[in-house]
Length: 185
Image: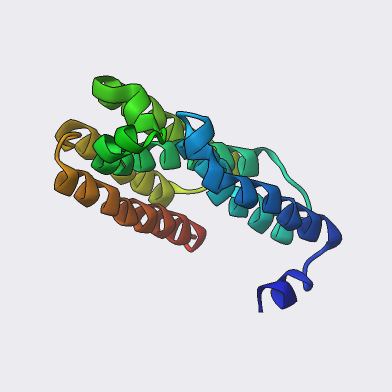
């Protein structure tokens, strides 16, 4: 079904989507190669932002790149939190993660990751001229990020899982802001 959908798009979009195959193939090996597999996951998982933009616009422009970079930063944040659940086991079996690399400095890095995400998403919205509901969504999203950073207990696997799962809320907030901004006259 996915291939049939893909074949409905322009050539540029099809080539862009197909180019993600290398990212997908390499991702499972990244934990053995680098302490930054979460970055590779971000590159892979957020490729859809570029593909979706290309499908609608037939090109990649600055807002699409900002959404992609923001998505990578967001993935780095939430997947680093997720990785803290398994850090002891990862260390024992010799696999790598940002949780092991960043350790007790994780919260500082979360500020960087989530700050970059918020800045990139906000910049994309500004370039696109989105109206006030979008900005309310960005503000609520930023507050949720602040809540995650200030309350996450990186040595408590259950809390890490809860904070990781709370990113669903962030996605819905962001989406709601975009949809409402698109429908304000």
